[in-house]
Image (spheres, rainbow, N blue to C red):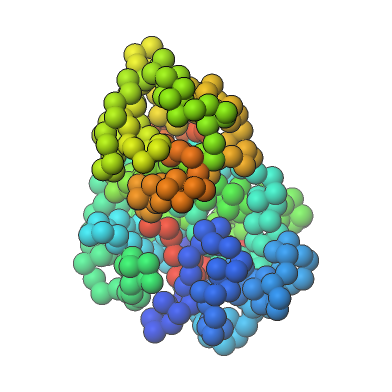
Length: 414
């Protein structure tokens, strides 16, 4: 069962919430972060992307970068830009995008739950990215950014969310991307007890986004436990910052592919090879979006095509085999185009669904890419089924929007 507990969060004052908070560290480059917070010394980027404090910007893994992260974190607390609550609380955080709002409970999740598999993953992590975030957590002694979890819908927690969201919030603003963000503090003892007990009845939590941050937080917690002779399991380092959303509220967006060449094939030969495993239909110059599982959209030579996988080319009884990312990776990218390693092959790139299929068309029309492939998005049910069976999704399968805003709540490990 999932173990969570309230914590004394560090938060910006209402008038500073938009100024302090930022997008996650891994959705923009160092140069983009530098430009985005230019003239704003209160931006969390100074802590989560501390390389921008150097002119010129230095390598993000330089030892001096982590030292500056600590200095900046201390400065934020000293200046009162982040202030810690006096008592342990839970928090409610809502995000609104394109008229749709999702509500997540901000909790301290348990390191041991990750180790025991109560917190379930569906992606592999890269050692270098995990190590970087581990160093950052270790040196700041805090979880500066939350991880994004989903949980099976729960009536008790649904009631808590409804009751809390009906009250005045402590922070509310619209970010530059046009997404709404709002935060409530849950400090009533009876609600805190209700939340803790409700999570204790939930069999599993699912990592939606933030696999590297989760792994790094867990590793630091285990490291601190090992190095503490008086460790009793109740220390704050045994827990890390997470925002937990009811699964039914979450929507996974499509995660699409663009490819630089056709592996020596002419467009005609490429289409002929596709026809061996797909029903290929020309759709013309108007953007065509996949309309069902196992249907794909191809953009090639100023034309859109519908590709429908033929029966026998996929396995709907296999949590991995049923995925369109598996079908396209095996039958198109690997078998025809010779792209075998999606993480490292420089001939392929990936475009999150928020940018729209027009971005695929633009990158092909510009001559940068030769073809684009749009996929029908993965469902939350598929993600949960894969995590429950201990399987791992292929790379670049899920894209969640909006991203969690960093800096609205921070969790210290002492």
